[in-house]
Length: 53
Image: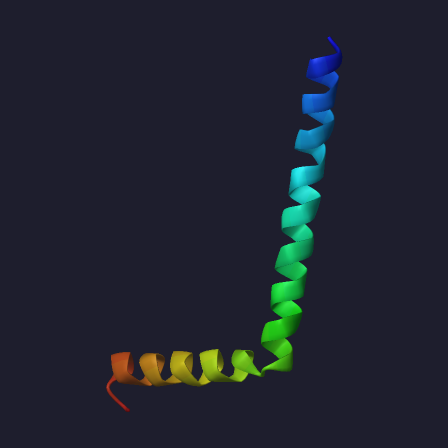
């Protein structure tokens, strides 16, 4: 029974670790201004689909 409790407690921590890593990665991307690069590429793709770009 103790093994089951330890395993359940370990499984509760994993999502919080993943969430923390995700937040850190988002902050790093914003600091490096990668969101602007993604927006620029999205606009180019959209204009090419319409036939303007």
